[in-house]
Image (cartoon, rainbow over all chains, first blue to last red; front, side, top):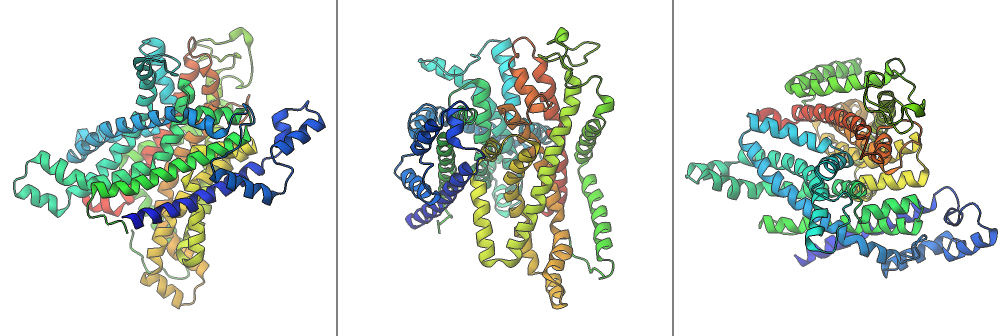
Length: 312
Length: 298
C-alpha cells in the first residue's frame, strides 16, 4: 500500500514538473513585453526597465527557469503584477469557495446520478430508461454558463428566492443561500454524467454470473442491486468521475462568473483581463496540483470500494 | 470490432470505402436518434451556409432607434443594445461556431489519430514520450488550457482553433493507440508485413479502417464539446472580437441587460443548446451501434 502511494506520488511529481515547464514556456511565448503590458503604453523607458528587473525579465531564460522552479517548490509563486499581493495568498484566500462549491455539487451529482443510473439500468429499454437517457444527454449538452443564466433568471430574478450575486454573507444561512444555485447548476450537470456512467456500468454488472447466482438463491431484488451489483459497478463510476474533474473545474469557472461568486474561476478570469502573468502562472500550477491530487485520491478510493485491489 | 476481410491489393481503397458506407448506414439505423441528431445538425449547417440569404437584416447594422426591442414582426427575435437584429446575428454566429468547431475537431482528429497510431504501432520509447506529453496535456482542465492559450495568443479564429484542437488531441491519440496495439498483433497485419508492405501502407490501409468508426464517432461528440468550449470562451470574453456575431459573445453582451431584456440571452442560449444536443444525440447513438459490447447485448 505504501509502496503504491509513493510510486503514485512520484509519477504525480513528474507530471507536475512537466506542467510547470509548460507553464513557464507558455507565459514566455506571449507576444509583447510583459513589463510594457503591465505598465501600459504611456510608461517611460526607465519605468519599463525597472519593471523588467523587478519581474526578472532581464536575466537569461535558463536563470529564470531555475528560479521559477526552485521558488515554486518552496511555495513562493511570486507576487501578483496587479495587486502586489503574493500569488499563493490570493489563491488560498478564494480556494475554500471553490472547494466548497465543487464538493457540494459533486455530492449532489452523486446523490441524484447514481440512483437514477441504477434505475435506468434496471428498466433497460423501457420508458424510464429512455427518458433518463435523453434527459442526461440534454444535461451534458448544457454549457454551464447557459444553465447558470437560466437558473439565475428563474430563481433569482423572477422568483427572488436566491440572491443575484452569490458572494455570501456572514451568517450560515446567507452562505448556504448563495451556495444553492451555483451548486445546483454544477450538480445537475455532474448528475447527467454520473447517471450515464452508472447506467452503463450497472448494465455490464447485471449480466454477470454472480448476480444471477444471488438472484437464484433468493436474495431480495433490492439487496442484489445495491449490495451485489452496485458495489462492483462503482469502480468505473469513480474512475470516470475522477476524469470528469476537468469538466467540473471548467464549469465552475463559468458558474462563478455568472453568479459573481468568489473563487479560482473568478480569480483566473480577472487575471486574464488584467494580463496578470504571475497570477496566471500560479493559477495554472494550482489547477494542476488539484487535478493530480484528485487522480491520486481516485486511485486510492478503489481500495475502499473493492478489497481485491492490491495497489501494485 | 468489425472483422477484417481479405482485401484485394488492386481495389483495396474501394473495398474499404464500400464497406465503410454500408457499416455507416447500419450504425445509423441501429439507433434512430442518430438520424434525428444528424437532421437537426444539417439544418443548422444549412442555415449557417445560407445566412446571407436567410438573414432579414445586416448582422452588424446598428439602429439606435430600435435598441433593445422585444421580439416583434420586423425583428423576429428582437434587437440588442445597439439595435442590431438578433435573428441575423444568430444566423451569422452559427458560421463562427461551426467553422471553429469543425476545423478544430478535424485537426485534432487527424493529428491525434496519427500520433496515437504511431505510438501504438512502434511502442517503446516513442510511445512513452508521446504518451507522457499527452498525459501532461490531459492533466489540464480543457477549458482552462483553452483559456490560457487564447489569452496568450489573442482571440482570433485561428488561435481559437489552435487552442480547442490542442485540448482535443490527447483523447484522440488515446483512442487511436489502444486498438492499434491490439491490431498490430493480428494475423492480417502480420500477413501484410510479410508481404513486404510498408509501415505507412499497413497503418493507412489495414489498421486505420478498423479504428476509423470509433474515431469518427468520437469526432462528432468532440464537435459538440468544441462548440460548447468556443461559446464558453466567448462568454468569458475570449471569443472572436466584436462586432463579429458569435453565440457566446451575444450571451456575454446580453447578460449585461438580463434584468430587462432576457431575450438577448435566450435566443443564442437555445441555439447553442440545440446544436450541442443534436451532435450528442448523433454521436451517442452511433457509439452504441459500433460498441461490440452493446451490440450483442440487445
